[in-house]
Length: 482
Ligand code: SF4
Image (cartoon, rainbow, N blue to C red; front, side, top):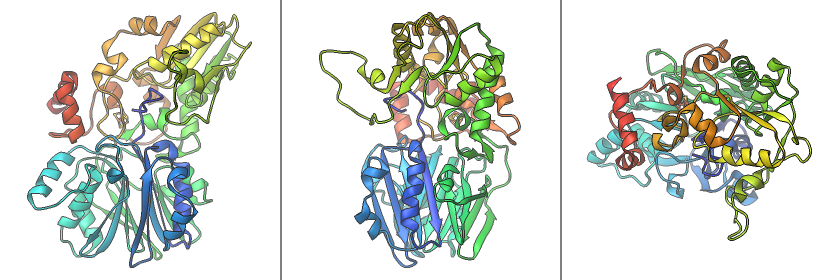
C-alpha cells in the first residue's frame, strides 16, 4: 500500500541489459523510468564475466546511485531492481537484486511478483540446511536454483520454477548472460528489448524508450529466455495455462507511455474512461481528473460524454514520500500539499471527477472537501475501476478486507462517506470490455474475488497479518475452497 497516496502499490520494477560497455549506467536509466513501480530501495548488480559488482540502498534511484557507485559497477552486463515491499519487510537485506555464489559461479536475481508458496519452500530449504539472510521470497528463489544441482543454469532455472507457484517476472544475471522468466499465468508484465547488439529485459516498455531501445516482444508466460551476445534462446518450463495477466496494470500501475502485454496502456486506459461515461452519464459542466493517474481515463470520459475536459486540480510533483506536517495548525496538510484545486475554475460548477480507484477512501474524501471549498456546486465521482473488495496475493500491496471501504460498505454508504452527489464504479464487465482487443485472460481477483492460483500457505507477513485480521483468514479460506 502506498501509505501516502491511499492507493494500491506496485511491488517492483526489473531491468537488465547485456552486451553493452555501459551496462550499469543504462540500467540506472532504466530504473529511473521504472521508479513508479517501487520507491523503497534500488539496486544494481553488474558482471564482467568473472566477477559480480553490486550496490544497493534504501530510497529512490537518484538517492542510491551517484557517479562513484556507477563507476564501480564494471562489466558489460547488469541487472537492476526498484522495490516496494510486501513479502519481506522494508530493509536493506531485502533490497534486490539478491546475489550469491553457486557452484557454477555468481548469480544475481531480481524479481517482480509474489510467490504464494514461498513459506513452504523456505521451510523445506531450511530443513535441507539453507541459511537465509533476508525475509524476501527472492532469496528463496536463489536457494531453490542452488539446490537443484543441475549442470547448466537453464536446467536449474527450469527445475526451480517448476516448484514455485504464484506471480513472478524475474531476471537472472549469470556471467554475461541474462535470463528472463515469467510465471505460467503471466501475472506480471515483462518485455524484451534490443538496442543495437545489446539485449534488454524490462518490466515496462517505457524503460526501453528511455535508452532508445526497440520493443521486441514479451517474455511469454511459462518461458525462460536466455539473452547473450549470441542472441535469444527460448526454453519452456511449463505447459501453456489460462492467462491471468493483472488487469490493474491498465487501470493504474503501468505508465501510460508503456505497452503492457503488447498493447498501449494509454489506449486501453482511455477506453476505460469511455466505458465509464457510457455506464454512468451525468449532466455536468466539466470533467476533471484527480491527477496524474486518472488523467487518461478522464480524457476518455470527456470524449465519450462530450463534456469539456479541464485540469481542475494541480498536482505538486515535488512532494517526497515523507514530509513534516505542522503540529498544531492545519490538519490534512498531506492531501493539500499534493493536490491544489485551481482557483476560480471550479466556482459554482457541476463537476464529474474521475479517480482510478478507491482503497480506504481517506485521500478521496479530503480531495472532495477541497473541491467543495473551491466552490464546486455538484460533485459526481466516477471511478475507473470496479470496487476493490479483496487483497492481492500476486505482488500488489492492497490492504486486508477490514480496511477496504468497498468490502465493508454499500455504494450509498461510500457515497455519503465521501460526501459526493453521485458515485459510480466501473463494472467488472465494463472493465473486461474496455480491455477487449488485448488477447488472453486477466486476473481481476481484487475486484471479483476469483483467485486464479490457489495456495495452501502464503508469505510470513500475510500469515502474521491474518492472525490479526480474521477477515483475511476468511478470505484465504474462501480461496482454498475454490
Ligand atoms: S488481484 Fe488485482 S492487483 Fe493482484 S494481480 Fe489480480 S488484478 Fe492485479
